[in-house]
Length: 571
Ligand SMILES: [Zn+2]
Ligand SMILES: [Zn+2]
Image (tube, rainbow, N blue to C red):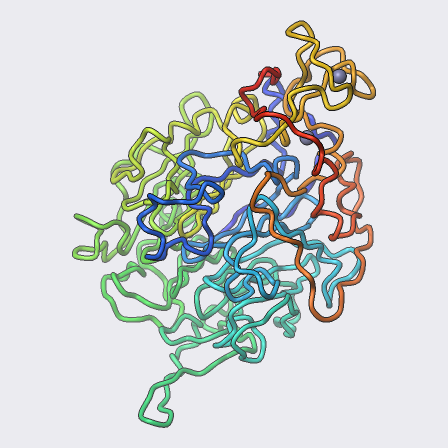
């Protein structure tokens, strides 16, 4: 998916309140809805979602992801064809979780990484990085992933049978490896990943592709089809990144890809499409695969307002937001009626139900479609639709239908300042600025085995001195027991001393898999790479290994405190 959010610029103070909304703030908190049973998502063995495991629930509405609830996340990355995701924080550290079937998250021998215990990766620990390197972008394909470093490096891991990792073809790359290419002497700034291919964008506005181009996804003018023994067909493997020469002279600013097709935008607003064209997903009026980036006539001007501002790719569709905020879609984007497999949109067409909205952002998941638009009161309106959303990935609420044929205003997100969306195959992530409304959302996991008495004094002083609950771990603290003591319930988010010590630490009583035992050479110890005035950036200098055992584990617990316990949350 495309992301228009650029690199981080942390603000000095983590405190945010509804009275003082940090509009310029470049980080937010992660919300999650939809499926969390990573190995089984989208697979028949699942059993229709009825006998789902309590530890891997389908989340029917957006929840604050507790594990990252006190990490300043600056960008979120997932894809319509993948069941894993990568979040980058404001100091350029990556946090990763989800399906890890072919080591798509860079660790061998683990079926999945729990969202409650995300893997943390510092760029400086990778070969090819300097002590100052931060991650600036990431891409999730079906079974492979890419990370982009601040000096333009690209690392990859996961399925590489067709060179989609940009490394000599092999079934899978088990840990992050650097893609050795000069990329035309320019820094790579963004990456996208399909099933068998990847595309990266350089600061100079050029694209490089690698992997297999059986449907023209590489944009190099050929599929690479050839006959091998037994009269079978195979396709060329391009593990060395190749420049997409058809776009020479154009300054590309955005790139997005579906499982087998790509869509790009240049600095003038011209939209280019190429790759697999089933269901007319390229919006060119036919279904023939396109081997070269080809401009979509509607978005070539000369009327600037009808040219593109954002491009998005879904599993069998493409989306363009034009410079007026109009939302255009091509291909198959639902199961029945106009726009389904029987009558796909053969050319880009405006979605009528959102014609009145000036869209600022869009995203497509496995079956979901998302848009952000300013509401009348200047707040953000999140718009969602999609058929056959069986895992709650639309997050419309526990009592609501899981699917929505028509675009609908997302009720649980009213008042939430969502500014980025990363829609996965069966799960959706949102990046939202902290405010009081956000603090009211449920948390995942829902219930923690939290002590009911103050962590410091173990006393219950009754209602006159009911304790403050940590926004991450729910642990209660008397205001007066804190060091220094608080004389009033703080505005905005509040995290307890233990959670502040180790942002991103695993949380929840279950489903925290044992820490990975790295095979081969142990990554060198991370060096402090980045400092600002931010009191929370201590985690940046910690060793990875310390993340897996939060200090409060093993402490005596009683009852299920939970958000509804006696403690007052400051609301
Ligand atoms: Zn106390
Ligand atoms: Zn806490």
